[in-house]
Image: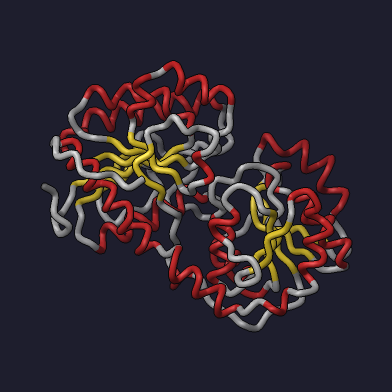
Length: 365
């Protein structure tokens, strides 16, 4: 039996799109960085599979020198196959292998049957894709993999997956300065894409006659959308900053009086929400996907109806001073820290190892 104080040999397999930790945008890579730091503090033996420019407190294994951001999907798949082969080659060195990917990695789950070392997969992406459901229906290998969701809502489109637990993303609170004093502007932080609701955020700010600061990453696939739909709306009180370094990001977050999070898709988690709350900045978002699991309506911000989102967000802004910044921070302290995330992942590792040894514990998923 694997005791709680037993040091584990853990492989963490990160995406190859960004480095770990990301210098700018990169939610998955930030989560991986936070997790390995916490596991390192607990004296576990770690190997990080990531890009060569990544930073690890212990061993780093790379099959690519630089992040693949902006490269073709074909090129990315080639590197992912090389990384999977390297993980397989070294698999006997680990007690457990933890992969952090979106659903696109699951065609490579064949490697799980070529080693005795158990795998767990954290699903960081959307699961409401028709081709994904087809994959799970056709592939018993994929269905048998141990899956970890990052919110309970994320599971709904794909209930047939073999979930062993939900672990909310966590952040290092010391990196997010708290401020109760706010300046007179709103903030939007995320990708400049239709599903993130950047146009809707601008519409809310204009209707409320508020200044909006936009910190947004523009992916190649979204350049056309940005040029035709977003750029014409910029000017006056709508200020586009673009993608910024981490310190500048948190500087804006702690000063803003509210974060607008008008998502138009099934956001699996929404890391920016807890980043804002950690800085004492309330969030306004629609009752969609993971939002009700992360926000407390009327306490850490306001949750509005998706059907009347623009108007209700404008009305919520009139009440934003009702939200106590200290309560926002406390909510993250209690629920979304890197320490809590690491402990929950360790509990799952131990469950999987017990199952692997034939001990069959009761699984609380």
